Length: 345
Image (cartoon, rainbow, N blue to C red):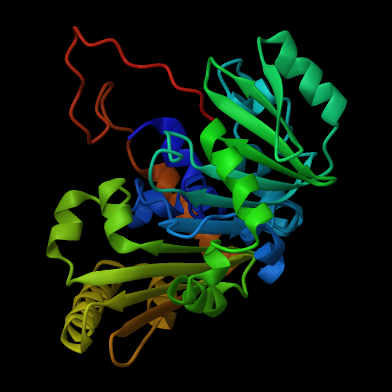
């Protein structure tokens, strides 16, 4: 899975989990590779076609302006944003200044490409952005009376959908978003099953809803872990970032028995965590505060990380020895294989 795809898929929830990971929390808790990603997204959902497998939202302005966001802003949006192979640099969008909120959707079919569709709401200097793209070989076209600028290297399109709304992604995905809105039907808003879960988690300033098999295909869960989990059909998460973080993780299993098995797995993990953190009162208190609930085929886990606990986890993460050079927990690529260069944020 490409770095660009890993970042864009679930970018809303990535603000939550990647931010925590930078602070040492995700690393310490052992979920380094997990990309988890508000009802304010309602208008944008009209552009997202039905059949979308993963969708997420982040109130970027609220997150970055929060106490935690202010402390971690340079880490939430790393300096690498300024590199020339960065997709935001390529499009001329400054996520720190221009973007208020984002919706990210991982599409299916030919429109999917490598870069999921991102709908960003904010203040955009259209003439400047267009001029920058054209100076880099971009071509301006119109689709359904919507102005779209397309770059070939990398293949990315940006469509100016409304006065304060742009679409960024694979050019075919941008055109499909325009077609979906114009038709007035066939969007995810017509997908009752997906929207039922969206309405359960859209009370945070970040949220995500995903078909679990899609997360597995995109390697968002380690294969060994996914193989040991009971059959899960849907995964959803909601986060509220302020001075600390509170979050709710929701899973729907294939049936009641699978959900019961999943609850038992989580209880076992919590028990193990309590044993390992027995000498860390602050962290043990956090684990003890985790609420595991659910009935039928639903499993819900809620937790809160106050600022003090985050600081503690950050300190513990900083104490962990760095892995030897070249060791990342993943197989090294053969020396004769040249890595593919893909824009990232």
